[in-house]
Image (cartoon, rainbow over all chains, first blue to last red; front, side):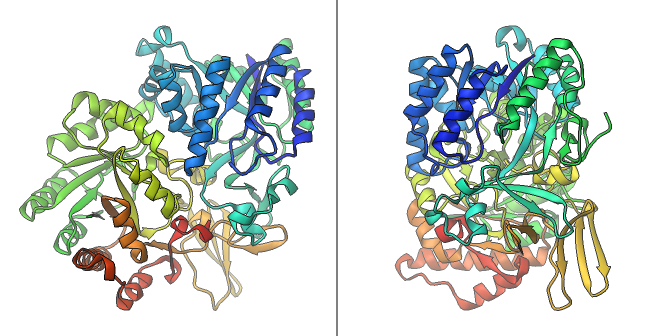
Length: 300
Length: 331
């Protein structure tokens, strides 16, 4: 079982990003995803900066994947995406495709990619289509249960695809889940700023904006155009179940300094073969994996 | 510009046809379509009747098989595609690549439309679907500004259809999992959002509470109009304020920009609302028919009529309409 670090989903300043990856280079994470996946206005780091970090991490033995923007609307975003895909292909980095546009560019380049969770692969035949386009790893939709994942991987194998197009599976082990993407920026809206004059207010919210129901339940986390879960998904203690079902990579989302400790704890548990990584608290949820509403906690 | 109208029942279907639809879209009675509501949609017999009626009036019939097929029940989606082909639908509206892959391989002559649930928001994504599945039309998600719609249409990768009127989904369709986060059922898997069976109304003194799977979506004072608790349209608290954090109860209405959409090269306008009554379908379709005819007669002088807007507002969530993402300030 490998451990990956998701791209930083929140808007952090350039210094914080560099410091984080400096520390991540020392961590037990096997795979590190890099890049801006949420908002094209978040440009503290330029494309060359990301490739500079990528090179450093690769030198330290990490597998590096460049991640693409998930919601691509403007012409300029499409051009930036194309540039990223070409540069990654030139330099031999995998790309995490988070929109079909990325798959279009990467399959034209015959360059392998990781299919992101928002691409909606719900069955083995869809996985086959994506594999034929060049996917070598995929992330199931967040709302899929463990059983559904087993069904898909079983189906993929029955189609004879496991040999023809070997496919790694990666699931989100720890982090707030991105549950929706919109044209509207909810962070700017919270400040009554127009999206086009947002004053980069997301920089003030390095862990997003907590949103509660009127009776105090953590319901959402706002992150620019993303609506994330109010609770943090925690499947860490179920990593052995995940492995049994064919999961190859467990992903952890960088949200704060604690994240690299969690990587360490998971790594220790994997080495020791124990299931107790991090206890589930009221801040957590694990519903989707256990076939109940995503926000809920299943007894495991 | 083609007017594509919804029908969740045979009477609604007939109203859509009688009031000027160029095409009517329907779904079968299961979770293969994105409006999988109790008492709605078409069994074989009713679908056949609908088709006969459409044919007799020269109107097209589209079938939406636009949820995402789950592995354990994949056969259901395959059977639905075959059924739509067998009975002679003019087009299949699909979102799942496996459904399109199957349709394209086994029924190469079938017109494939990419559903809004496919979430293709740019022309490179559309190119993927054209290259791979030979789609003939794409319905664009309600996240694009007018300028962005113009850019996608101008790329001429494929014919473009956009939403004109109805419930406003404020997230990129097909990529919203909020409903399953709260209830376990989502548009992608079950063809539902904020399903009615999880809705609860509670009177707490003067205050009326709406809940979805026990999560408080909104509280209404006696003088406020209560709305269905669609989870993205509730009042929540962030940064010390309680407000409609995501969106207010409102509907989409693009009547005001109809000529711009036509000029952009948009080939079809879709009316949302397979869950609506025959009376609703009749009125909304009739207004849009009049509007398109008026525009075609004299595009330069087109103006919406106050009566249309008033009636459409009356049919809208919160009795309000918006241009949504088509208008940049909304974003």
